[in-house]
Length: 479
Ligand code: GDP
Image (tube, rainbow, N blue to C red; front, top):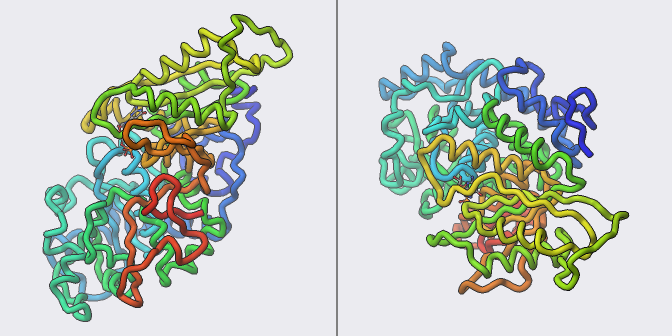
């Protein structure tokens, strides 16, 4: 059993094997140094090259970040609508807040890796509540885009038709002269509805003109990292950063996303009350993409089939009213997350009304049941983030197809989940779920284009470490 007294934590690696800097003051973000006592030690180790690149990035961020002399100079240029005359020593990537929280976390992670690869400084548009959810990840310099940023009011209206849009610039210029775009910024549209021109972002020859653009503004709702691995210009660097390919978001996520103190309170109070004492913790993330509220019997059947067939949970004995097997009184705590409370209630009742065949004690908990996805409410997002994080602290995880909420939990936790297949025609799939190939998230909208041949191709069949996802046949994931 875990002892939560911080003086006796099982492994005290406050800096996560050197992944995070020791330059922070503890109180501003308690989760940063406390989380180690809530997690098992990760089986993965960050490469020393990744660690050195993170420290280099932090130095760049400190030199060019908000309110530095460089920042003020380049912002003044941007406000005046002019491009700097010489190559600038600070270039920026502005990430615009957009979409559900799981999507935001994955794309922000993708944006950070892209910034690291291209020596850009990542600045984040805080949207409704980003500053409420995440601690500052870089020491001594904020990652939040200052609110007086010149074109901040235009973020909402930036779209594929904007003259500053990357795809549009390529469309209107004959490829070779594309660098002549006069705007000091380029808008990158990497949203699921992007078109063939926007997708040329992933082709080195088309991508290269961005090198001379000081400000890149990005909107995305996708985990686009797998396709960066297919670009020759990044391939070697990525290989050095992540010798184990499936650890990309595991490390980026653990480096960037620490819950702020109010969220850490939600997480630790819940953990200590309901999960800490169990012999094993099981996470079940239920996400049903249906406009009706549910619960649905075919989904409940699916969750149970997956849990029982894979020995994640024990079966019940419907014929016995009482089983005594004192030698096997192990306890399992199930943390179920869902917008609906129905699945939790049914599973909890099942283990109340009947004994388990194994004699194990099954406790079932659900932190919230918010009913439907809400976009402008602070507490709603706080709970969603706390729940993703709690799921990442479990020992075994079952997730739902297509859900970035589940991807965040699995990658942060370093957990290879069982993924519930997406039901068709309101029937329980058989088999109900499959074990994931890796802990990586799936890129839902990858390009299928051979940049050299300028023709369509199956990007899931080029290299062995990039394959189609378990839960989405056209998606790509690192394995
Ligand atoms: P995805 O739609 O499953 O890929 O995940 P997102 O996180 O991007 O968007 C879904 C949003 O719906 C979440 O951010 C939450 O606001 C809400 N939501 C979905 N499932 C849950 C859940 O189990 N618990 C809570 N608290 N919110 C949820």
